[in-house]
Length: 80
Figure: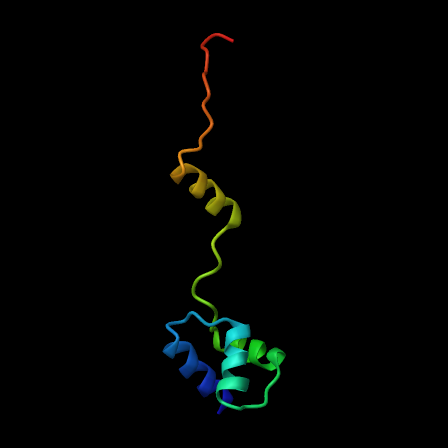
């Protein structure tokens, strides 16, 4: 029953929900009393996981600097 519900929510969210959102949807949205550990274990058993991770912080900072025109200028000299 709970596993079917978790799978349905996962499909309905296009695979975007991780454990925390899934737990919130079950407890707040559907009034199902379940712990986050149980949700995590069922998701692991089903092979269900969040489809996209948070973007890498370092990469996003570098991309922001590039788009702002901030870059490092380097002059390489041959023969040193």
